[in-house]
Each structure stands twice: as structure tokens, then as C-alpha cells.
Length: 141
Image (tube, rainbow, N blue to C red; front, side, top):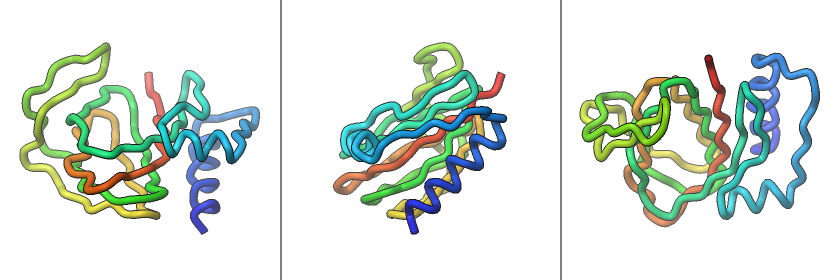
């Protein structure tokens, strides 16, 4: 079931972005990316990567990237929306902060999907043990 959901998400992203060639990533590379984090595919319109966290992160805001996350293992407390506190530019169009006020709390578990539009603060606030997930970043100009 999870593979069909993953294929559906990635296929929909490719169709929406007008991809004209298929990209295949073997299961060994996917498993490695989910265990350690790493890129699986990238173009000027999107990136696909695997990610793994064993602890919380910083608040993030991407001015021109919509993030689509699909949790493949583990759990986390994830905050979206609200207002970023202590935000500083980390590179062009990217912001990192220390907290979110007024956001919505989500308890993410295996099988969950969350879509974060460009410009929205988001944060892995708590990761009790670990969480692995696919990330599709849709880039807009």
C-alpha cells in the first residue's frame, strides 16, 4: 500500500510539473536515502529526496518551495503555519527560526502525508525516536 501511495504522489508531482522523461531510482538507493537522508532526483522544477531525523530540527520557511512529505517510518510532532520566531536568512529564499507561535500541531506517523505551501513555517518540533520520510520539493519561480 505505501508503495502505491508513494508512486501516486511522485507521479502526480511529475505530471503537474510537465515532466517529459521518466526517472527510475532503485530500491537500494531509496532505502539508503530513507536511512541516512539524501537526494533521489532533482530538476529545476522539483527535487525528491529521502530524509531521516533522530531529533528535532529548526523552524523552516521556503519562499519558493512547496514541500510534500510522506512518512515511511517512525513518528514526530510537526508544526505548520503560524509565525516563525527568531527567523534569519540561511540562503536566498530560505529562512531558519527557533520557534513557531500560533501554528497547527500534527502528530505524524507512518503513512501520513503533509503538504506545506511555499512561505509557510514548518518544524519537526519533537522526534521521540526517529522519523523517515520522502520529501518532494516543488520549486516555483
